Amino acid sequence: MDLGLKDKVVLITGGTRGIGRAIAEAFFTEGARVAVAARGDDGLRAVEAALPGAKGFSFDAFAADSRAELVEAVVRHFGRLDVLVNNAGASYGADAATTPLEDYRRAMEINFFAAVDLALRALPHLEAVGGTVVNVSSIWGREAGGKAPYNAAKAALISFTKALGDAAIRRGVRVVGVAPGSIRHPGGSWDRRVQEDPEGMLAFVAANIPAGRFGTAEEVAAAVVFLASPRASWIVGTTVVVDGGQSKMF
Image 1 (cartoon, rainbow, N blue to C red):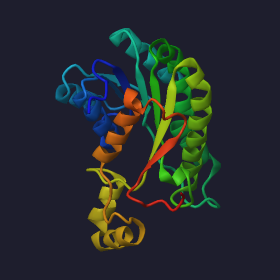
Image 2: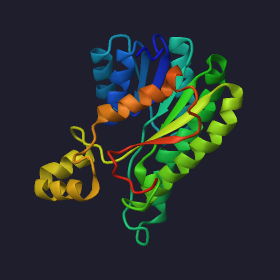
Image 3: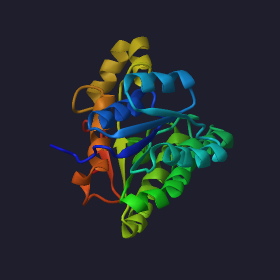
Image 4: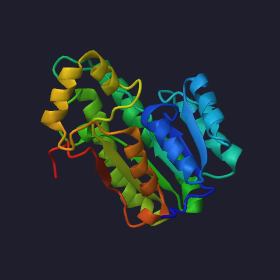
C-alpha cells in the first residue's frame, strides 16, 4: 500500500532512540524527508548517518525557547512541515500520595506542555499543506497503573488530542494519537526489567498482555506512519491503542 508520504517533511521529537528512532526509520522507508529532534548530539549524528538526507536538531523539550526555535529551524531547512510527531517524553515520580509536586510539574512539562507548545507553533505551517499532528501518549493515560505524574500528563495529552483534533480539522489539519502499551526495545525501561528479572517479566506478560509478549517499537511506528498518512484521512481526534490487548478499557 502506498501511504502517500514520499517527500513529506516529518519532524519527530525524541527521535534518536526507541520508539522515536523506529518512527524516524519507518517514515524514511516511506520516502519522507525526516527531521529528528533530541538533546544528545551523538544520537542525532547517528540518525543522520543511518538515514541519508535526514537532519538532526538539538532540542530541549523543557525549554520554551528551544521549542520555539525547533519548528522554525525545520521549516528553514526543509522549506515546509507536513507532519509533527510529538514523541518526546519521560516518566517521573511513583505513588500518587508520596510523589512531590515538582515531579508532577516536570512530567507535565515534557509529556504535555511541550507537545501542546509544538503543536500550536506548527499549526500555521501544517495548515498551509494540510498536514498532521501525531501525539504519542500511553495506555497509562487511559487507566490506572504506572507512575501517577506520567499517567496524568499522558491523560492530558489524550484529551488535548481530541480537543485540538476537533478544532484543527476545520483548518485542514488532522490531529491524532497513539497510546502504546508495554514496549520493549534495546536500552528501554522494559528491556532493563527483563534483564534484571526475566522470570518476573515472564509472569508479568502472562498476567497482563493477552498477545503473550511485549510490543516492539516498530509496531508502534507502523501505527504512527499510517495515522500520519493520507490513507487515514477520516481518522481525526482519536487516540489509537497499540498494546497487544494489554489495556482493560474498551
